[in-house]
Image (cartoon, rainbow, N blue to C red; front, side):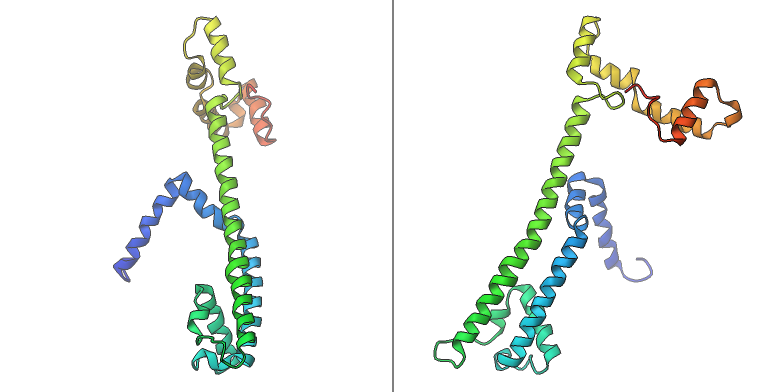
Length: 220
């Protein structure tokens, strides 16, 4: 950025996306169904290509000179159609005009197929994906709030058993002292970094379990 233009410094503001789970879901709502969106967009381009050819052969005079070739007409239809202003870009259609009915059919079919159906399908895919991601995030947060991270014990059961033993805030004691997640993480790194020839018996068993991705050594 320093070697080109200060304008690029503005893109650093997008870093906020990587620090917000909600904004991250917004980006994922577009990128996760990327293949579906691309295929849907491809279908839309094919349909607009066909509308462009119809416009070139039938409604060329209505494009004010921007439809002098088939390629130019197709580009105009795609460009103006994606903005939703194709009908405003073309000359007005009046009942006394020759080809009035054909133009009405062209305008209404383009509005129905592209502006209404296709765009709503694309928006529906994005909205459904965002809703799915939001539900999964809420479910994950609920699980972390009500279940022990390591042993998956229910919070109410832990608190009830702790009260019988005279321990207050039993769930917090379990999470922060008895089964602290970071203690397990530190131990895993300790085992991975330690010389295997110096393993104790339990460390040997756990190291083998880690290689096999076996979690039976955890208090689950």
